[in-house]
Length: 111
Length: 113
Image 1 (cartoon, rainbow over the protein chains, first blue to last red):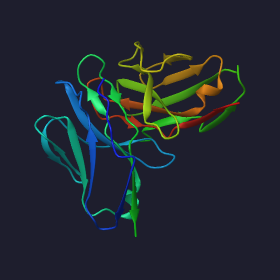
Image 2: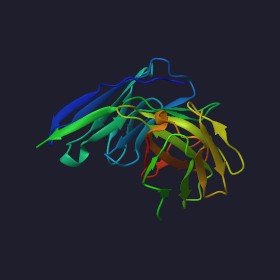
Image 3: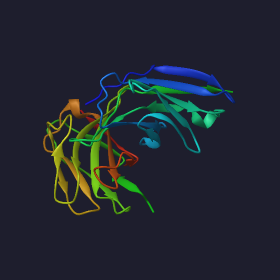
Image 4: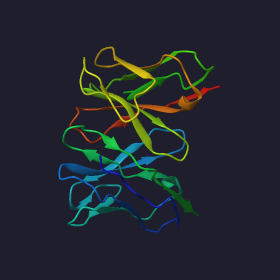
């Protein structure tokens, strides 16, 4: 199962774009990259997923380079309500079909 | 739709006691999961059920048992609780085992003294 490494914490001011990186050096061919958001005392919530290149939805963009050994979650114009822990679990698409969570990045948005 | 619900929200046990954590989903999902989350850590998979009638071990299954009661319900049992099982437990579900999007419940905070 692919392991992930993220910065422990990040700070950002309201209105700025935030980029959170995730390293997953041993990602396998059948694995997908997903990102989840977790608020205190709540379960994680799915944000976005991708296999390669760029994916965009209504809340975020996901950038994945050709070698797929890392990914970057981009949050445009963050607000105080985006303060949360962000995880980049790898979804194993063959065999185990599991999500493997790392320790996440705690994003603090400052007024 | 309530999504994924878990009971109880909080529980305190003494070492050696047993209890069952309940989970139910109303999204007609085939797959369900149990995770634990320790302070400063990510989630670790305990057990999962790819479909009704099947269960499989995850990363940290020791000390736990599960039952997929029907398509909606998936319970987690601690037969003899230990302090090392103090954690927050999350139940999740997904459309099927091939779906990367999982829906999580609000969690159960368990303390074993």
